[in-house]
Image (cartoon, rainbow, N blue to C red; front, side):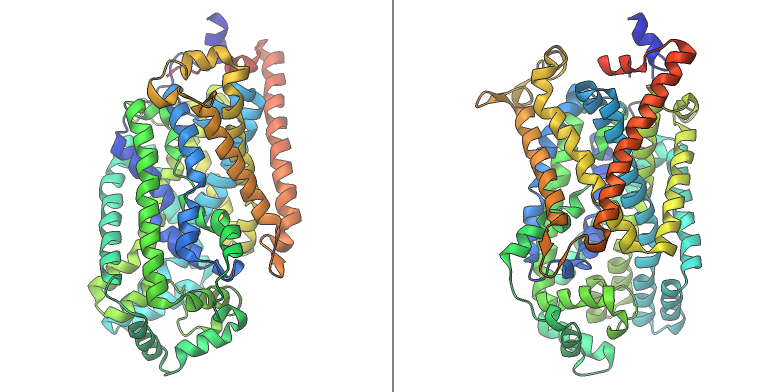
Amino acid sequence: MTSEKKVFLRDATGLVRGLTWFDTFGMNMTFINCVGGFLVTLLFLYYFPGVNIPLMFALGAVPTIGMFIVYSILSVAMPRTGGDYVFTGRVLGQSIGFTQAFMNMVGFYITTLGGFNAWLTIFTDGPPLLYAMGLTTNNPGLTNAGLTLDANPMLGFSLSTLVVIIGALLVIFGLQWYRRMIKYVFGTYMIFGVILVILMIPLSNSQFITAYNALAGKGTAYVDTLTAAGQYGTFVPSLTQTLLAFIPLGFLTFTGFQSSVIVGGEVRNPRKSQPLALGLSVLVTTILLIILSVLSVNIFGASFLEAVSYLWALAPSKLPIPVTPFPTLYVTVMYGNPILAFIVNVLPLLGNFMMGPSVMLVGSRLLFSWSFDRIIPQKIASVNEKFHSPVISVILLAIFIEIWTYVLYFQGIVTGWLVVSLVIPVSWMLPGIAAVVFPFIKKDLYNRTVGILPGWYSKKILGLPSLTWGGIILAGTMLTWIIQQIVPIIAFTYLGASLPVASGLTVVLFVLGLVIYYAAKAYHKQKDALDISLAGKELPPE
């Protein structure tokens, strides 16, 4: 017991269990950002020509099965701040646990979500909103403002910086402010999402073609868009492409739904809250994605969606609408009502905005957990007594996200996104491997944590624990994701020219994680005569 007190920074984290099951559910849904994720995914359809969009999203829910099983069980068994960092480190060793978490932080929370979200909120989501309001109110000033924002990276970067700052402040001042954000912003987002679905139900393809041609001021604009896209303007259904796309694109929107486990030390009644939040977020998202995709294909046409995806990426000047071609903008054109235009087009912006505070909350808790285990400087785990918030870790994370936001604005969004895309499945595969072997290589800890849980948590199926089966599914789907990103697709690979850099970065981050851990271990051994690997022998205090 003495060694445990020495190795952990203090006897209690200083954080409080202030998140209800609804807060936890809302947090996971902000990471998913269902409508925004759906719209962004449509912009990348040209990577997989012929993909069946509704089926792609339905299959995209498959990888969540393994994640749900593993993260539900382990978040109930080990409800601590750090989530899969704690799980993986206690099973595979502290060095692997930190390396997994380090890759997850860099590849997912800082880059894919943090900077990408700040960029999307302004550069991609802002212009369609302003453009739609200008169209429906006959206000050229708003329309031009949308075009200016889309064409002015420095202005966009400044506004994205403001988004990062607001997200950080909502977390710095404690959970009560974050909970208000979930209640009001997420609540509004869900209501607006339902309105979008209701508005799309009565619309037809013929209505859209008429409205699109009128907007372009040319009776053949719809056909011209299909023609300009060449082979991407003629949809040829492909089951092969659908199967290749179901994780890189279909699963894309679901990613992050497991993030609530990282704030496990701040969730009330985790045995109830975590599985409910995880399962409900997947169920709601699956239903909404299928509904939105079926409606979109019926209204806009699969050929049109694929053509717009291709042209927006490679020849945007050939599109009659000079801003991000979200289907929500097309719905606006068909109704022509400014109130509906605001509701429909603010959805992507609202979704990406509310993701910011969630990234700050979860990412700062990862930094906190590393510091608590003495891997990074102790100051990062200091907690403000008034707000019960690790202020320094939030500020540090905001700085990292701001740096990546700059990269996205001035170095290229697609390249930046693809370069880190292999890091994520590799880092998420490790908790799956840990889940597979946990009952066998750490029997005592398994029996004290998972083995005592009731019902399906500790149940055996065909002689293997539920956790092991979940780990097999999780590790298998992550391996599939890796393969799907590097195998040939039609005339090119998904990663293409980015493959060597993406592979190299993945290796570099893995090695760098190990170097940081062992450097910290050597430092504390020499300075304090302390073996920080002992932290991996027991669960951290609450």
